Image (cartoon, rainbow, N blue to C red; front, side, top):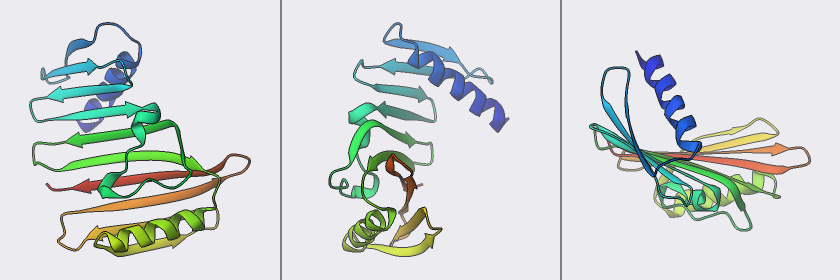
Length: 166
């Protein structure tokens, strides 16, 4: 059944990217109603009875999860942000950007930001071209994972995944 939701969601994302009216209503695999609203600036909102997902692309999609600062000099062109709120009250966000800095520099910057923001460092990983850090809120109400990967000839691609509540 989860696979059906994933396929339906992918179909809705594809349809929403094709243009058309600012609001459309679809029926999911179990008959639930899904409203898709586009605001014309790169933001699409998917609403269901049990929550909503907001997808923002382009420069508008580069806001950072967990209250973290934006990375200095990062390029948000082609950025992506997804913020979902579920029936349990939790929410999650995915953001990405690129920089010409090395992965180690990105991870050091965010280690300092996480610690200054009250996060505890839960894990780190160094796999050469890819480095990662995971921070958890001391109160157990969320966390952030940051991965930075060097792409030859393209700089470093950074993904930030954050969640809280629920």
